Length: 193
Image (cartoon, rainbow, N blue to C red; front, side, top):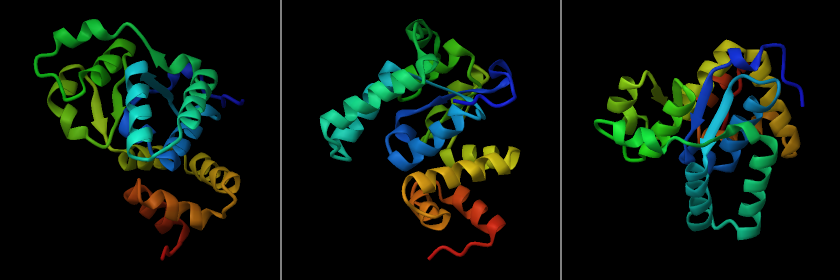
């Protein structure tokens, strides 16, 4: 697994909330960008992954064996991503968000960014801790603007691994991150139907 040319210490630490890790196509592109060459350092906690597992079972009807395999894969491929010892930060929060353990994990590892479908839930308290919550489209758009070649190569790899060309893969991703897909399509002059 290539780690690119940039030192990991120089890369931003980003907390991925459960709601962006549950949808498989979105999870896949987010993790590919954290895997190598690396654009950022992905972080989550056991509590976040427990939420992912519940969502996969209840909302996506994923079989328990596949859910267990996902957790094993995350542990094996991203051993450094698991944040521990953050619980003490929760009582320090003046106005805890709906999922205070997510912000607490960010505080514990010094993450300045939380990627979530509910950035408004973190707006007040996250600012106090010098963190910002953004939606996944915003996060991916910034990654793309920062390194178009790498993001496009990653999208091509994702499409190839799914047995698609780029256009059908963008259609799959459009449901999860429409603004990001629209930006890529504009740049590549692709008209999705």
